[in-house]
Length: 264
Image (cartoon, rainbow, N blue to C red):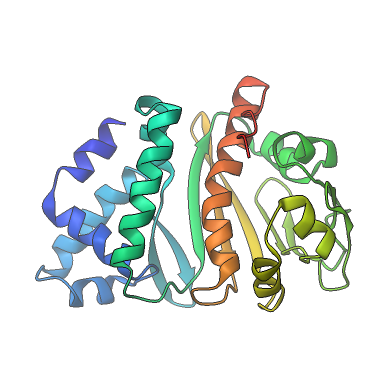
């Protein structure tokens, strides 16, 4: 965590993070345009932020786009904030965000974490139905070939849909599939109000991509959830859901037990 605190200690780097908070997924040129810093200086600051895990990147054509990554901040919270204080801090943060929100949330949701495991074991955790059931809830069933269906089997029953399919599959390296269908049964099991379920069912189908890379004794997992409606309800749900789910995945792979489910 030393790298995280070192990265946050610099005011210019905090300004870069603020710029990405206001509009995630910016190129180097776009970040330079909004700050009175030379391109070389911005590049150096971004390198420090990326090394600390606070910023992650993804290619979009010829451009390299930069995204905020919440994983290191969550790690700080997990280590030093008690469960009671975490909920109070989250409530204050949500209120602050609601009062300050002035820009539209667009682009993919990107989250990066490092797990002490192997690429093969992580692939199994993402594709084995009994594995996904332990930390995720539903069992994800598929033969994981491009074009094959992905069936979700959990509290909301079995969810199958012709558009719920595998897009890419490179074992131990990359997995992508379209997101599940929001059925009434799923909505009831999730405890979502009917008006929220109606909104998310009206939004376009999104997709998720898992990128797996060896990183010494660790494995870097980058999750990119894309094709989301700008400022949509699904975006708000997955922005809260992915950090918790991936923390449980990491804990399961490193300790053998997933995180306990939070009280509803």
